[in-house]
Amino acid sequence: MLIVGAKGFAKEVLEILFQLNDVEEILFYDDLSHDLPIQLFDKFPILRNLEDVKKVFHSDNRFTLGIGGPVNRYKLTNKFFEIGGLLTSTISPEANIGHFGNVIGNGVNIMTGTVVTNNVKIGNGVLINLNCTVGHDCVVGDFVEMSPGVHISGNCSIGDFSNIGTNSAILPNINIGKNVVVGAGAVVTKDVPDNCLVVGVPASIKKMLPEINLLKE
Image 1 (cartoon, rainbow, N blue to C red):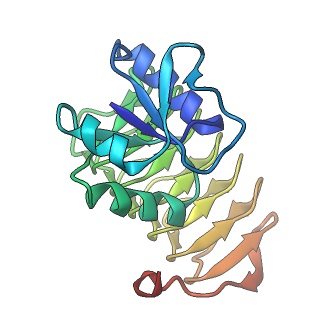
Image 2 (cartoon, rainbow, N blue to C red):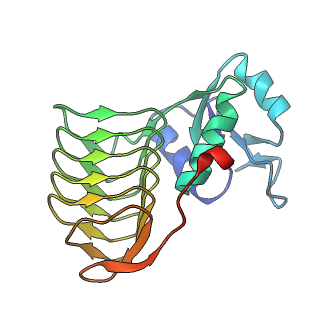
């Protein structure tokens, strides 16, 4: 298994793989940082270029995302798709996932202490960090990121590429648009349109954000 990234969040993904008893053939990838050792924790090789990744993919083409940021996660997913990678989820066995009606996409990170109840749809490339809760009948779009301690009440929807800040809460029956940033500690009490930053208790729009146009990337 290749973990894309070799710094902060990648180390947390490594812990999930340890919990899953799947650390015998772990590799990391980082082609940007210049302050990393040859091996992380003196055990796990860090690959620096795609040619080396291609060689690894001949025997095991699984990769999982070890970086944050919805757009960055999307771009890196496509980068590794292009060389034959298989986007793979890492879900902590110490998360509590309901047994009825849940659909979880590819490349999802669900971290320790998270609770996902029933009839929840989670899109591709989603990151649900430590100790989050996602209530019944929620729909979480592709490449959404939830920081630690986020609480999503029942019957909510979160649009693609949205980023939900630490210890924020979304009340029941709320629709969050695409490319929305919810500030840390915010309490969202009403629907939020696309492309904006909301902060505060109750949350209100602080500013509008540029649309994400990935076709230009």
